[in-house]
Amino acid sequence: YALNGGAKRINLNSTDTNVPVVGNFRVTQGAVYPNFQHTGIWYDYFTGDSVVVSNATAPITFTPGEWHIYSDVKLEKAAFMELEELGQPLKPFALYPNPSSGELDFLVDFAEGVEVRWELTDLNGNTVRKAHFVSEHLDVKKLDFTQLSAGLYMLNIQAGSEWFVEKIVVQ
Figure 1 (cartoon, helix red, strand yellow):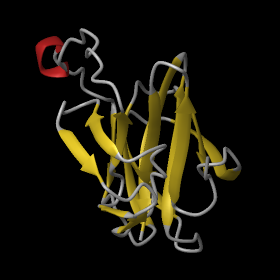
Figure 2 (cartoon, rainbow, N blue to C red):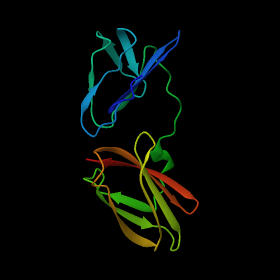
Figure 3 (tube, one colour):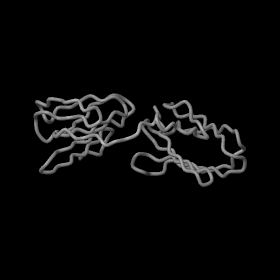
Figure 4 (cartoon, rainbow, N blue to C red):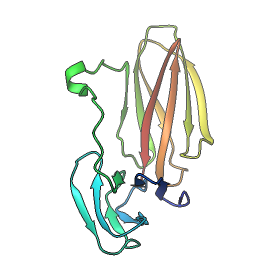
């Protein structure tokens, strides 16, 4: 595995199949080293496309946030229902702009008097910032993350008994 830096990798090994899970969690395009367990034909789990690997240690360029699960055995995709089929409930808030240079508007539409707590964490789960306020129904709060390093963060929001998690990209 490789968990340092913006490129992450986990290699799963068994006698039946080998599976590298690789991703670029940087905010810029970058090289990812899947370290395939061997050369030959590999399959992308999500697309089903095959990839011929002639150099098991060669890097692959991924866009920001791109990740893949490869397998040396073609795996059956699990039966998932598309989100469009379910319909997505409207969130009672919006964050913009995202990606951001660090200043975001947090538009909330929770019921008046609801206590809203938020906590920003890095990808290691470390709390970077946190605060709380009482909702005034339709309200805009300014979030200032300009002092943070560029990267991907998770904004955990609790409003009454509801919980939400949003990805925040600071450039």
